[in-house]
Length: 386
Image (cartoon, rainbow, N blue to C red; front, side):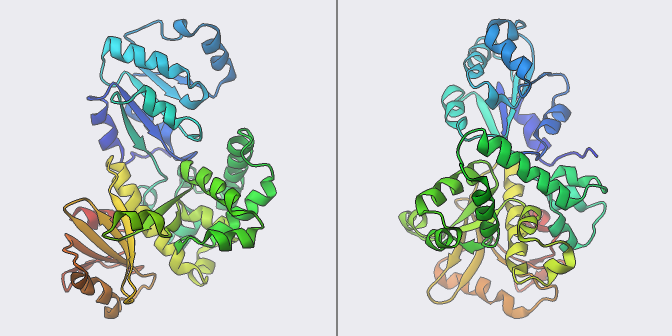
């Protein structure tokens, strides 16, 4: 099933300004389909194809024999030396949107991209589907949706989520990790992933994670770096006025997709998730993920933080856009409790002058109360736009 992605409204205009548009993101997030839909006139080269890789190595000049041509280079990280030619042609011909690059595996590639195409490429990140993209036409219920996940392949009703994530992990572990010789013991890495899933939405304690997984902290750091670079996980830094503290203090860790979390934790359906001890953390993972996707789909990258004061005041999410700040509280309950607004109301005493105060909960009504935007689970993107 093909759907129009929200990021389309960002991608097409950028191609009218930049000579190169690069779209990265986790595997199977829909990058190839996005590029085909946005740029059907571009000639596609699937650089996963060993034959095309051999043609490139044999006669690179013939690959771009039409210097005025429009090219879509899929899985471009497989031929990193091609970037030199892209740079030369883009500078020589100077056609906006001449090259569209998509790729998943960023482990070794992104530094070369930034060096070779600095100032020439717009860089976008495509993440799994938002709620509106995935479930606006048919919702199986919120908890069932969070358990199922947000990858495009799961739009197919007959696709079993457990089978999908088994295949996804097999591809990720076997192809990305093993092929790069970055992990020696895949079984231990799979155990580490499951332990990490149980920590989504929580402050990261590497020493505890090391003790539980039987892996030293140096290896933990290495594996976390792999997962972050490949967009399986991301972090929220703690909010401090002192920038150095934001860097050195422990961040909160989130998985990009709740379906993968549920699969790793053995949560088989929405009812199990709704009654699971980690339902709050998984719901928070979903909400923060929706905010993350909302801004990436617009080509924006604001500072995202959380607040945890010694006084007991906690704010789940702070969106810092320089002058404006949005403060968000996240609750997995479906019936509003007015006490949930307390921390948001106390933020003025901490020196915040927020542009928006938002409370997201698992209910199905949205309204305003005491200057706080109450947002249901499906309206996160729209309330951010208000």
